[in-house]
Length: 451
Image (tube, rainbow, N blue to C red; front, side):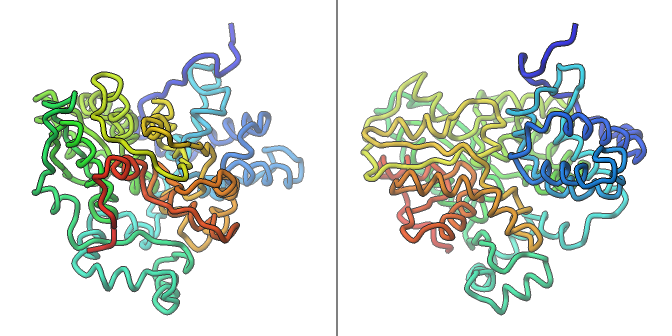
């Protein structure tokens, strides 16, 4: 007997990326038409991202008003707008597995992009932007010059960057640091021997963003955990592969997964948790890697022992209690729930963590920021990204709190740009809520200026 969807928890199938049929363009087109026809008849996802309005416009403007008169060559515009936020799969679609329609829109977009990648259709500029480790190492060697050249106020170099890399001249770009989080981790913060959790140990997976672009996130996490008696060390074998995932380069993602999971195995053997600082990276380690490499034991164990930093702090508070010393944050905080934090299916852990701070109002924004990884900075997408994120920016301003923060540091920057277009009185924006918890404990770095 058929059941209406969303009555059971959504499940996902392993990704058969090594099966020759996975990249068969005829089979992909047939599946796209099957799924798009279901989406056309439902339309619950019309307001999630730009993929669905593009799809529905293609159908509505076709000669028959149905999918049968939409040429397959037009499907690429729908695929291009998917940012793999997973919100359609996790929150909206009534036809996800185990429903008999077996609809997984994001992974179908991934399959399409994998076929494009195999056919050499991913552009040179896109491939270079995805090399986060290489870019971070090179830019870090000349951080001052790199940050000057990429500043939105530097119209000359930004216009040149737009020509060379296709990046919108007004899109805010991450800054680089000459001294990475891994470099800074040699000096460990002193442990609080009086904390309830004293004696616990954990490994912090730096992530490329925290390592090269926002090491203050990692320093804040280590400081908060040390204040709570948790000894940490920073490990960074390589990027989680999310930028390559977005381009359909699944072989490279699998290579990164094997490398990271192999190095983390020794720490897991010692009973240590692995803490990821960025929700997109936590999502890859927890959920996407096991679907890509379902038979890899190291990947499976890493998935089972990985925590988002907010998830770990909340668990610490529940299981053993936090060390005293949290002071209120005057003016309150508005938290944007990042899509990739929501997709981890762990609850609103960022909000739960901030509500541990006494006498501090916490408002929550549960709308997409519109950024979508590298998608939102591209010339052809930037204005669309701001449009998608406008409701979230409007809600953040309406909350009228002193601080605005997102669990995703890229979303935080994008929200700031959206708020700047809407209002003149700007709240202070930081890259991640762990930085506010560190501030409430009085252990925060006062600046995250590139160094």
